[in-house]
Length: 230
Image (spheres, rainbow, N blue to C red):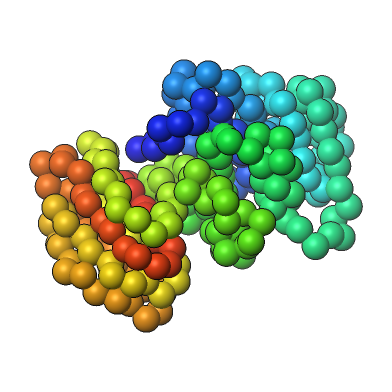
């Protein structure tokens, strides 16, 4: 389930270093935007290149690739920025921050940022918790994480129709913060308007006959996950 912002014409695809990113969806994204920019994040750049793409940018300390692999990334990148491993930001934070500076109105899709039950758990938390950082607040509603069996998108206060997908088995809503006046309608498990005082995972809901699910809330941040069982 790839969710496109109605006004966005650009997309930035960032590929992180988690194992086996679901890059078969990259071609679909390229087909629905007027311009697409491919950004390799450390070893993720090598994954994009092996999938047949050239990079607009490559970012990272590149401590997860060999010298020969780094040379491959360099040869297939329009621009490469290498940083010291001793730094305050993660490679993904650097890549997303610079991408926002250059393409401020784009949609941002992160592949290989969650890890699909593989890779480093601390990297997964670092990437998901990007949404708490003030420098990223303006774009979190245009940020998505794409994995083989999960799509993750973030919502600020408002009312939304969450679209169904034939491949989705479960719809999970996870409050990243306290929430005010949350309601869920037209799902298998509906929720009357409630306040939630702390982050809570409302998982394993389901679409009914592929109709959209309506959610609304007045304060907080929600992470929505479309989940496919393997």
